[in-house]
Length: 265
Image (cartoon, rainbow, N blue to C red):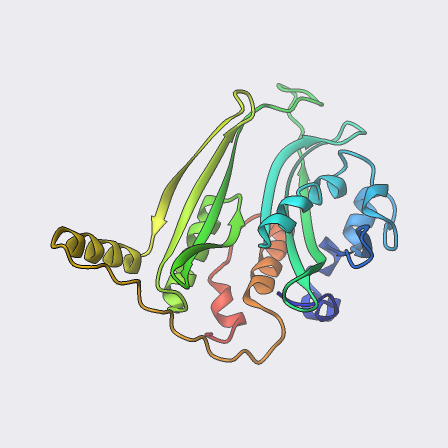
């Protein structure tokens, strides 16, 4: 994870207005940065204020509402939904939260970003939120003999494109995407695998063949050692920044830009 000190507007000038930076080092989350776009949309610059000071159900408050989930999973998470702000504005929004750490272990900050579009639907009217089935897409990578969560998305296409990028990087022996669903009305959920890399399929096929022959199954080969990075910004940070910049320009995902931004790493 990158450190709080690694984050600056100079690194992401095109999207810094849509970002916010939370400091968790004193126990109570406090805004170190509250982007100009957020300040205008919220009606006040909250830099220096506590997260608890945000008005409930505003875009800013909703964008940071799943902070505890990010702290528990320790991975970037994106989320989007339709909602109604306290003043009656109906919005369709997308947000992302990314963990930051000074020592690579304890999470000491959060880099977030969000944007929205106002929704005006005379047939539905203001103030109506339709109950729906929520979906999250977890990217898992096979490391040190077990599957581990790499990142979480709320957009299927974005998750699949990122999983394919990770798979082609050859950094891990296997990659998969798990779709997690939750029905708000019935309060029931489920999960299924929607993507599994060809390497994972070959590993499973070989294991099954060996098991049928009574041969002890070997663990998948270790992943190729990634080249040394030249910058302090991790791939997760770059992913987060791209998602946030895409939010700002209307929701067309350009994940293939990652290859050029990471210098082919």
